Image (cartoon, rainbow, N blue to C red; front, side, top):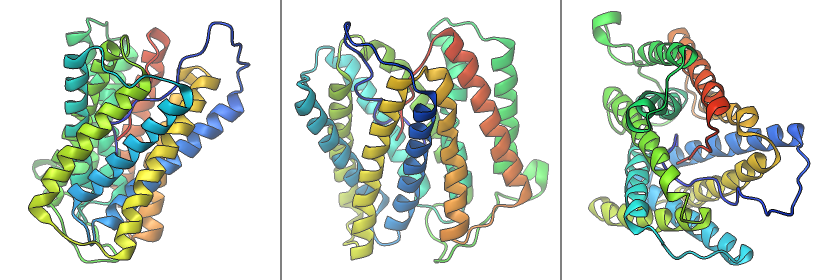
Length: 328
């Protein structure tokens, strides 16, 4: 998700008279829980697309996200009215593009779930590349090294033919191979990560005028309507199992967002954000145990390099200007 240009962390702010004692262990635990739930969302989305279209699966996920944002806004007395509509529109549009690409990639059975989620988690790396251009931020040597590591990891995951003499790694799952080809899956996953990174830059502007609940609600409604319209071109009635997986994916994403929100409220971003990469490991484990996917040693090495590069980018950038990441 990943992965992702979706909902920002909700309720991150604190009142001026409220003092919160940091709890590093609790924050790390909540972030690990959040990453696991996002991984479960990725798994359930892939299972759902065995009978339902990827667009309808994304539409249900977005609709559940809108409901979560609405309930939180009502409980906290926050307004959902838009103040900077142009900025909110562009943030929602980019987030929707990211969600569209994410669920399209997750619907593929030709690239392992772990590899797909690895590519979806390139957003921090893209952000490190784009920030000096659009936000006029300086890129440190550590960030440059991290970008190189992540790109090397992508090469190992994607395995271009001119270097390895073959196409992307094909995986055999417990079900029939279906969905976009492995090459298309990789390209779409990278597009999802790129659009996520751009959406994260728009969050800086939108976050100055809108409440987090309003950003999440407007994006989720925008995405739900868009995905709903796209799903009309591939109408399929999901099985009971598929329908339950669709709803489960939305619930996992909603509760994952809550866990991530609480983690950021308890501890500094630099200390907890790195734990979000546990979703890559968890997704790979889910794929191996529940989908009978077996990524090869080259793919595992590539996943490791992407994770290391992302962690270096996260910690290096957090020391300069802490970011709250978005997830699909």
